[in-house]
Amino acid sequence: MIEFQHVSFAYEPGRPVIRDLSFTIGDGEAVGLIGANGAGKSTVMKLLLGLLQGEGRILVDGREVGRDSLAEVRRKLGFVLQNSDHQMFMPTVYEDMMFAPLNYGLSREEAEKRVDGVLARLGLTELKHRHNHRISGGEKRMAAIATVLAMEPEAVLMDEPTSALDPYNRRVVINTIRDLPQTKLITSHDLDMILDTCRRVILMSSGQVVADGPAEDILRDKVLLEANRMELPFCLAGRAGL
Amino acid sequence: MQKALRELGEMDSLAAGSSPIHSLCPTAKLLTTVVYIAVVLSFGKYQLSGLIVMLLWPVLLFQISGIPVHVCFYKLRIVLPLVLAVGIFNPFFDRAPILYLGTVPVSGGVVSMLTLMLKGVLCLMASFLLIATTSIDSLCAALRKLHVPGLLVTLLLLTYRYVGVMTEELAIMTDAYHLRAPGQKGIHVSAWGSFLGQLLLRSMDRAQELYSSMLLRGYHDHFHYAPMKPFGLSDGAYLAGCSALFLALRLVPAARLLGSLFVR
Image (tube, rainbow over all chains, first blue to last red):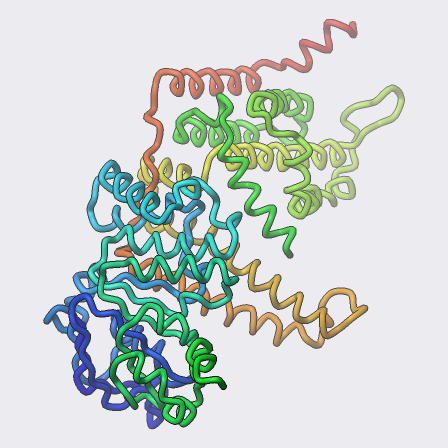
């Protein structure tokens, strides 16, 4: 589904943020992209979405991400931003959710049916006509996920989906992510959430893949994590008696 | 700042009302407002009495739409002084008396100043009523229907959205400033430059994020506005009736006729 082939990128000449990055994500896989601040996780997302252009090749469903394929690629990838306030720009949740389906040529009736379906599936029907500036942080995060699901993307990309959420809302978001059937690529420092939602983890450091494998193996490797400025997930640290 | 943000949100809430005025077609409301403003502006600089009668329409609209008049003046409190300042020097240049209040002469400058002020207030009230009874999306849809270029309409819509973005950033920065400058009123002049620079950079970053979010959800220079209520018979009647009323108030010296009933 997603393939990075020797991708490099630098915001400033001579200071690469991504260095010769290669990995593949298969259909339906749930992958956690982890790493310390500045490891290049968000840049990977932006490159994948065509918001930045680097060297090398990025393929989505076999189609290379480039100027000509942007519309097609972006239709397949739904991106949930870290800050929901930056994602939602229409006055109400309903209008925000209608935005993408209408842009992709659905009639208003079809789009509304899809929006109602997503809201019902996520248990957010009561949010439908609420104003974006009047809903809580947790509701806003769920609404942001709903706006992306209304696109019916083939893959969902999420940047820190549980940041700044209280435990209850964090759990709601985690359960929602787990139930999504799409291919998932999630960047986060919340390693417990990654362990809960992803079967595979890619650990990045200085723009390169340091480790790529089953989430249980990588997230249990204290030495590896600490060498890359991270810690064991809380749940595993507890079990290890640390 | 938080108050300003809340007020921005309140405008959306006002526009979501359900009065007979709210339920009119946005195109009819927009055209009626344009006609009203044009008629108000067409009054001569000494036609104060004729202009006063034009208050009838906004007062009626406030009553029917259920929007309290004080909300309008409260929300326009920053713009109103600017409007009222227009023509403030007229009394110094035009000193010839043109009417007498009892035995007190009133100069042309004073009358023209009051006329200009009233014109400004009436135009602001009409614009406020339009925005308070019509959502920005519906307003933009109406503008597109009237063949206003799409680029201009999108600019209007995004400006409206980004005012909120900039205000939010300003609120965060102001709070951060005051937390480290206790007891200080406002922002010290020495910090204005960096403060404004940072505000601009932060707003641009956020605007860029929002724009990316739009692009990633299929935006291609074209907004799909919410479907407007079609222009029906009642909307036509509203537009025609209001326009006829404005023209009548403009052409017939209603204030003078009313006055002549009491004063010989």
